[in-house]
Length: 285
Length: 150
Image (tube, rainbow over all chains, first blue to last red; front, side, top):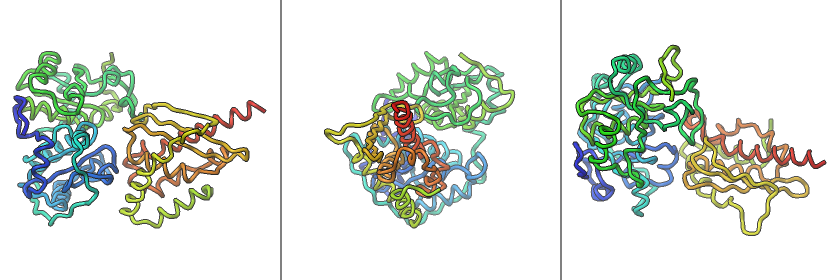
């Protein structure tokens, strides 16, 4: 575990901790990346691959899989309701946080992030394998419903939040926030018709929360960034958003687990919904 | 339209593979991508090295053209380039070797789903076409220069 005075230090583990738990049957490692083939080039021993689009999202409508489909996915990877799932991946754990957030949507509480993600593991010259593990099928009882109401925000709720002057955190790059670009730097335009941000949102790019090596900053630094600079207050009802919900799940993890905010939701429709929505209010600059 | 012969052979091979084997082959090609970098002493008719917004790192495309107008591409990839882009680099350097610039421009992009599978194209559409686009751009510039020099 890592304790930089985080509210929930148990939610973050080091590469060393992971290396010591490779054979722990109560723990399942899940690699989740942006680079679709990266897992196949080598991964941590015993890690399974869960892809944010192919595995966690419905393949027809823009939403997540059903509780039954989620339970089947977990069972296939030998994950039961009691398994501690440790997520890691590329891009400073963007997709690992997204996968963790999605697991929470389905009520899976025993979740952790490997601090620094895949890059830190590789940087430390730790072993990677191409052997894909096969586990005895797990027993996973699906949740009755997804926990959408607790940790997920939809358009109408975000609009009401904005109109009520409640805190919104836009975690995209400054250029996206100002409306100068409609996609991440280094990524293609993917079909957003308007640029800008949700009225009243504060700009706190996700990257502010991590160090150069992709590990999370200390709680003191994070309090300074989100509270002193962005004006959040502990206990506030916060909605975070980005473009499709992956970067904001990183910030959701920071606010929820590292700073201990109890009422944070991720608006996963994010800017690809808001910026295309007819009549949605937009601020620029 | 038919694909250039070497590319057609690669496409045919991939089409015969099961999804897991396709992934394995893509990894093999990705691993071999670095071998397509310029070699010591090589000179090029055109060099196009840049960092585009649609790619996660710098990509350099280098074009050699023989007196009979046969193209040979060399490509450099920054360390952050994704695995699929690396695989497409190796596939295209091999598959388009010996084509004329006109043939490079006419290569239809519909071979991509046959190689990587329709699902992967849908899931990572931004990644799979990038290298082909960059190669065609270089071929087009070379042709424009050739026409201007006549």
